[in-house]
Structures are given as C-alpha cells and as structure tokens.
Amino acid sequence: MSEALSADINREIARRRTFAIISHPDAGKTTLTERILRAGGAIQLAGNVRAKGERRRTKSDWMGIERDRGISVVTSVMTFEYGDCVFNLLDTPGHEDFSEDTYRTLTAVDCAVMVIDAAKGIEARTRKLFEICRLRDIPIITFINKMDREAQDCFALLDEIASTLALDTSPATWPIGRAATFTGTFDLRTRKVTTKDTLPENDPRLEQMREDLELAEAALPEFDRESFDAGHLTPVFFGSAMKEIGVTDLLDALVAYGPSPRAQPTDSRDVRADETNVTALIFKIQANMDPNHRDRMAFARVCSGRLTRGMRLKHVRTGKQFALHTPQFFFARDRQLAEEAFGGDVVGIPNHGTLRIGDTLSETEDLRFTGVPHFAPEILRRVRLDDAMKAKKLRQALVELAEEGVVQLFRPQDGLPPIVGVVGTLQLDVLQSRLQAEYGVSIGFESTPFTMARWVTGDHNKLDLFAQTNRSSMADDLDGDPVLLASSSFMMRRTVEQNPDLAFHDIKQIG
Ligand code: G4P
Figure 1 (spheres, rainbow, N blue to C red):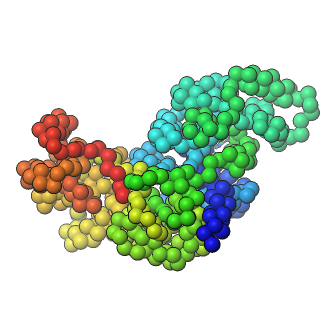
Figure 2: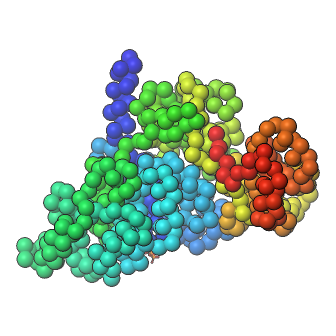
C-alpha cells in the first residue's frame, strides 16, 4: 500500500509545475497569463476578454476595490493542464505596495517567469521581485516580451540581465525577424523553427538569425540544469504575448525542465514533496471572495503526500484536527472540488477564520513551515471610527482583514484604540475601502507618534518588566505577541541598547 502510494506521489509530483509571473507593470503579464491559460485550455476567448476589461479598469482604479473581488478570485491561483503537466500559476499582486503579500506568494512557488519589455529592459519592480526570488534561490525563466515592437538589441538585453541581476543568461530561443517583421523563434535545444509565416531558406530574417546564433552560442553559456535549479542561470525566451509568438516555447520549457515541487523548510527539517505524510502551508487568506457568501478562503500549498477530500489534518498551531470537507481547485473562473492534490498543488480551503497565514496542516508529524514572515510596518495609524455604534463590527472586521494580511493590527497595552501598521500607504486605502464595501464601516485615519515597530522577545520576567515600564509604547499583535512602538530610530536604538537582555526583531516568522 505505502509503496503504491509512494509511486503514485512520485508520478504526480514529477508533473507538477507551480510558478508565478513577475514583471514591472505594463510589461505584459496579464496578456501573457491569458495566452498561457488559453494554450492550457483553461479559458475560452470570450471569458478572457471580459476578464481583461475588468482588470484593466481595476488596475487603474484601486479605490474600486470591491470591483477587484471578481478578478482576484481568478488570479490568486489558476490550475490548468498542458502537455503532460499540471500547472499551478500563482498571481503576484500587481501593485508595489503589497510586498508582504507578494513575498508570501513567492514562498509558495517553485519557479518564476520574469517578463521583460524588450524596449525597456529591466525595470524597477522586476528587479525588486527578482531580489525576493533570489532570497529563496527560486529558479527564473526569462520571457522577453513585445518583440513585435521596436526593441533593444538582443545581446544588449541579455547583457543587461546578466549585469544588473548578476544572473547568467542562456538563450533558449532566438527571435526570427524584429519589430513589424518579427515572425517566430528558433529553439536552440530542439533546433526547431516556429514561424507565423512560411519563410524561404534564404529569407534575410533566417540569415540574420543564423549569424546571431553563431555569436550567441559561442559567447553565452549553454543551459545548465544545476545552475538553473540553484537560481544562478536563467534560460531566456523571446516572444510577443500579444501576437502569441513564443508562448508555447515557454510552456514547453516549463514542461521539459520547469522544476517539480521543491522541499520546503520547517522548524525541524526540510519536507520533501515525495514524502507520504500530507503537509500543507497556508500562504494566503482571502475573505469575502464572493460578496454573496461571506466565505473565507485559505490558500494552501500542498508540500507533501496525497491530500484527499474528507481527510483530517492536524492544525499544528492549535493542535486541533481540521477536516478538509471541501478543498477546491481554481480553474480560471471556475472552482472545482479537489478530490486529491499533491505536492506543488494549491488548494483553497473554505473556513471561518481558523486558518491563518503561515499555518501548517499535517497528517502525522508535528512540524511548522517557516519562511512566511511578517515585516515590521513602517507606517502606523490609529483607526478613527465615524459611527461609534459600529465599534464591535470594526473590531471584528479589523481582525479578519489583519488575518488576511491586508494590514497588521496592534492593540496598545494602555487600552487606546487599535493601531494598524502597513508597509506601504496603498494598504491603508485598501483597508478603508474594503471596510466600507464589505462591512459597511466607514473609517478615517489619525496619525500616531510612532514610526517604527519591533517584536520583542526574551525571558518572560524581563519582558514583563520591560512592558510595564514602557506601557505607553507597547502593543500586542494579532497573535498576542508583544511589540514595541517607537517614535524614531533614535528612540528605538536607545531602547535596544538599554535592554541588552531582550531581542528586538524587524521580521517575525509566522507559524
Ligand atoms: P501588465 O499586466 O504587465 O501590466 O501588462 P499587460 O498585459 O496589461 O500589457 C500592457 C500593454 O502592453 C497592453 O497594452 C498590452 O496590450 C500590451 N502588450 C502586451 N504584450 C504585448 C506584446 O507582446 N506586444 C505588444 N506590442 N504589446 C503588448 P494597452 O494599450 O495598455 O492595453 P490594450 O488596449 O492592448 O488592452
């Protein structure tokens, strides 16, 4: 039985590909996502055009967050099959401010596709996202998009990637034609030419391509699996998402050498995807996805074993059993009950607030996945309630939205109204508009004297004493862990110096 199970698991994880697309706004992530989903048969044309229209409006109108609900359902995770593989495409939030959310999503992928605009090269946001991937040595596949327009020279682009990101580049395909004459690609691995138009042997575009190739193959490294897996080398694809050129090259490459599910770190050891004990990590919570049903979806990455519907898993943080009655897969707009899932898969688990970001579910062994952090917020505001009658509702809503990771919530130990902490100001707008739209609570923000927060740990008695002496600067976070709030880095430094027995952290590991 267990041998059969192992064989089953091994076969299934070998065909799992869990990835995210990272890019600077406007490089073509949405377009590429649509083309990929279409190639994978996950969406029909009519549906996707509408989705794109909605997304467009939403992207430029972040205050209309309620409108965003529809599309974020689609984009949190999309599962589809292509070739012999099951793909899980995780969406990274488009806006710069959501760095924590983005970070968490990237902890759940095994590989990232970096989309670059061929005219603009590496842009700020791409670079930032790349750095997050590098922290975890996530392998990167590069897609140079918009080759159907005026673009930079291919060698210059490859050079730029190598020098600005310190990442070796190995061209996987080479473009045939440029700008208006861009018609297809040559695959360096399979030596196959794929073009929109049929080209005669002596077509100048082919001749140019052969000339370039000679140079490229002499000067640039060959694809090396080990360096790719370690995140040191990126295979590079050229294409046009809009014209649907190079998209299947990319998908075929993901099938051929996209990494299968990685081992995931826990507090005690790394958990391999081929282990039979079922484990899963909650990396994202989304509340009120469907405005008609107050549901709350926890997104879990299955890390090992075979998860089946109806199974009971241990919720390690509380020690309680958690029954998986209705785990779900997401196929573009549709949700579907997940009968079974394997390492690398992402399933949605409806729940009423039991599951939190960073939680571990485990069939047998008591372990906790690490690497899903909270970052110390840099902006701290007190919430001002417009209608005092709604205080209770606000309390509940703030907890729910904090659990979802929209903001961090701090309850001052001196009993004053709660403080919310964010890494970027856009999160405040999101909080305000979601409170209004989903809970009917209207709020404003007031400044606080605080500009910094640090989690404090140390000996129980010393910590208590410290909290008593600094009561007006102490707060509890959502989990009840003590946090010191300070008005300046100078004050913070002084407090740290005066309390050598305590530790002050700007990152808190969840779990
Ligand atoms: P994003 O999600 O990364 O922000 O980019 P998105 O796909 O929305 O693309 C941004 C713009 O670039 C869109 O144009 C899109 O059509 C265009 N685009 C994407 N891929 C390609 C490509 O391969 N070639 C060319 N030439 N353009 C591409 P837009 O004018 O902003 O919107 P729309 O009117 O086309 O919808």
